[in-house]
Figure 1 (cartoon, rainbow, N blue to C red):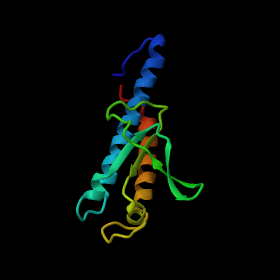
Figure 2 (tube, rainbow, N blue to C red):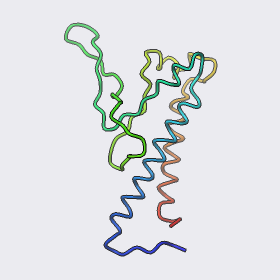
Figure 3 (cartoon, helix red, strand yellow):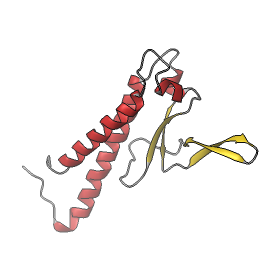
Figure 4 (cartoon, helix red, strand yellow):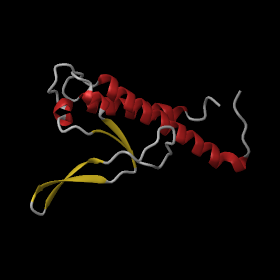
Length: 134
């Protein structure tokens, strides 16, 4: 049976459902990246970081020049995801890009992009199901 809500509760109901969607997508994506990370010592797998509404970091590449780096993490608390915030999952190691591009025999080139595409489909599926189960 569908959950009944009063008309004045629709906004809160929708916001709660969208927050739940964000929570699931962020945590599942983080879990997938860690699970499918190539492992030698485990350092790479342990170096995934989630940032919330983070700013881009920068790296000095010469006098007066900076290169954008990954968003900074450390401002994120699991379970507090809210729709409308931006979440960035990135690996802090300098060789992360090489591993994402197939440097390891344990993971094919493009494995991170594949997870991203799969999680985008998962988010759409979850969004389509919002409210149908309550």
